Each structure stands twice: as C-alpha cells, then as structure tokens.
Image (tube, rainbow, N blue to C red; front, side, top):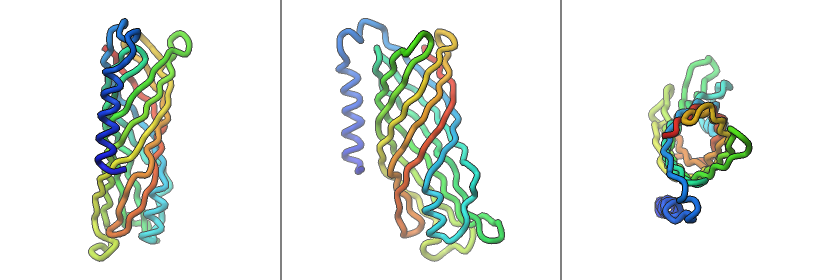
Length: 205
C-alpha cells in the first residue's frame, strides 16, 4: 500500500465520522484514551532467521499500544501508537547477532455496540504507518548485514470486548492484525504480518 492510498483511506475515515446518521448525533460524543499490553507474534522473525542464518529466540515478544479516540453513537475515529516487539536472532554460541524492532502509528475507524449489560463488542479497521528497524550486532558491514530502517503503510483490523467497570473506566480485551509489513535486512526485502493479543484499560470522558 503506497502513501497516496493510505492518506486517501485516512481522509475517508474522517469523512465517514463527520457524516454519521442523524440518530447517532442525538447522543453526545465521548472522548476516550487507553493503554494496553500485548503478546505479539509474527513470521518476520522466521524470515529474518532464514536470511541471516541464525536461530530465533523462541520467547514471545512483549508489545503494547497507547491510543485516543472519539465516539459518537456507535461509530468513532481512533489514533494510536503500537509497539510491535523486538525480535532477536542468535548465533550458534547464543550471542545476539541480529535484532528487528517494529512499531506503527495507526489511524482507524471504530464500531462499538453493547452486547449485554456492561459489555460491548468493539471492531476497528484502518491503516498502520509502520517502521521496521533492523540492527546488525555481529559480523556487520557487508550486505545483507547492514543496519536498515523501513517505513511503509499496511492495513489493520481488530476485534475486542469492552467490559465497563464504572461509567468512565473499562477493561478491554482485543485481538488485532497488522498485515504485510515491509522489512529490509540490508538489501533483502520481505513482508510479514503481526498479531496482537492485548489487555488494557480505557478511560472515557
């Protein structure tokens, strides 16, 4: 996905929020913000392992996100920073020889509807402005073992369960996917998706 299409989709999300049905305008809008910790999985580590010839550290990377948004009726618009984890490749001696660290800025449309008393279903879809940073730690200096930073756009979607603890505080359990993130190890390019399983708190104003 190139920048032109990513910006067009972002503009479309903003336009959709402004054009909500009149019945949604009967209820006042609500601002919210939140923070979540996440377990993150990705095949990017396996791709990097095959390129550099090392062994992937099997531990599941820690990630998370901070975000803020606005809901009017059941629909909203959200902005967030996602940390997608650090992935380490080791040599035969157990030394870290390569590191991949990935993050994203996300702009998404949100749909939230009450399922039963105190529980809401939440869905989101949008674009992720991704940043994948490869760092060589051992035997560096020649291709492909050269530090590389790759910025691009990817699509994202997610679903979750919002559990309202009080009128303003809720607990949010979510699954989210950011797909086809572009990476480079030196001059070798590959694409892989990221999967987030998160739990966090959200404060509504």
